[in-house]
Image (cartoon, rainbow, N blue to C red):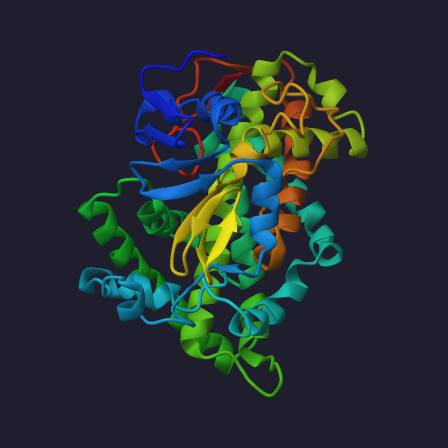
Length: 415
């Protein structure tokens, strides 16, 4: 049995785990810890988080689809009944922006909102964006190719996803830097051990973000265009239009989810490819090999590690008795490393053909933007390695302290 590092304590008998999620030894290389959890207790109670966590592929896959669990609980029980605290006044703007988020609601509201936006994200519509994505990637590389080196996140990875999702919604390209700033502050609230400063920054970003979206809504209501926001404003579902609050929540979640994770994944993918020592030509020789390579990077270095669910009724999972109102966490990135599903799970194998990764979730909350994220990765990674032969790391990248997200501080490259 593998020895545990000093920062990790596991009691297999009680399935209790002690681990500081903000410890660089953990978030800098979480896969090593996930492998140890698979070895000792794939289902465990994380003492610091006061919650049960599941890492086994079959459990995570099943729980994502299990309708006994949901993203919200207050549609079936009151705060008083569940012993939950009242909303915090200093997060009023954030809570309002999240109230109708596709990530946070359940049917029938979820069904209605998702139906209104789903058409824009189906694969056949997304595929039409491939030339536009390729052109943007080529032009960005044109801007730094002659320099012989770049910090790839700021010069490339940050720009492509936010530009594409912004264009789809109907937001001008020049708003990209501001959208990035709002998004970084907004999602900071999901980090482990967030600080009061993080919460205030998230609430401030939510208000500014929402105010900007409201101005766009007013413009598109008066003068519709061929964009997703106009579609959401002017399309009915069973005789109902989206309210302004629903439009704001949906636009914000599409912007955040539509670029934040993809930025991380571009950086993570380039890093793992370069560190593998495998020739890019072997990974991007044709469309099929490119797709397998992209899926393997999503498996081994996913950008979002945890989805949470509320137990909507008393239920037992893997010997764990849960009561209605209990919250559980599913570690998608660990499920992607389950040795019962993947041979040598910690090894990057671009020709791997095993279980599909769970990086985009599953069930009714499967990531609506998955086709766009996959297309962006499949389009830009081959271009990057074709345009910059001899691409190499100039220093070992550091992982950002933003767990349960997983991304790099910087990615310094030369060629």
